[in-house]
Amino acid sequence: MTRFDWYGYGAEVDMPATRACYGRAGEWDCPCGHCRNFLALARERRLPEELLAILDSLSIPPEKATYVCELCYDKDWREKGLLYQLEWRIAGRVVKRPESKENEGTEWGPQVKQPGFYLMLGHETYPVEPEFPQPNFDLEVSLYLPWVLDEPVDGPEKE
Image (cartoon, rainbow, N blue to C red; front, side, top):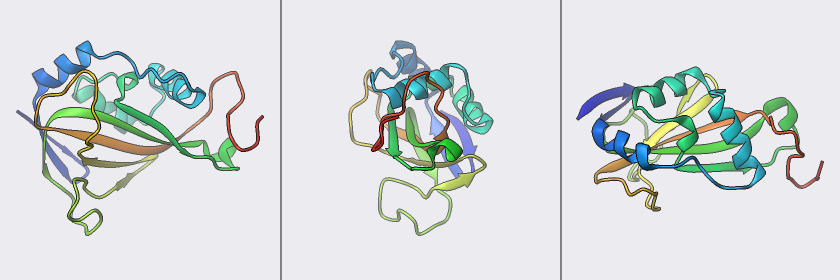
């Protein structure tokens, strides 16, 4: 196991197992516009540098997220971007959480605010293909991303 420390979290990662899982995995493949927008940004590495550094240290291509969701439609999205929740599953375990009462008693640690995103580590129960060995955990990030596709954004008011 390789030890990593990120913003008050500590994790022990099974690097060979994580690399093998992502070697077999495809890119996130939801056909909706919001997911395709994320993919365009991830392929061009237009995510926060701090997040890319974490993913690079784990040998995880950003476009191979294990969960992508545009969280809510905001009428001011043109200025702020669209709020996304992104996750990447990792073989290993969380061994330290930042001190906080947030999410106490759950599988998730607290959100840690960084310039441009919020990060937290925990464990989701939904399956991911390919299957990850046990134990495993998820790196979750919430952040605003710009719309870069040459098509309208779906929302309450169609463009």
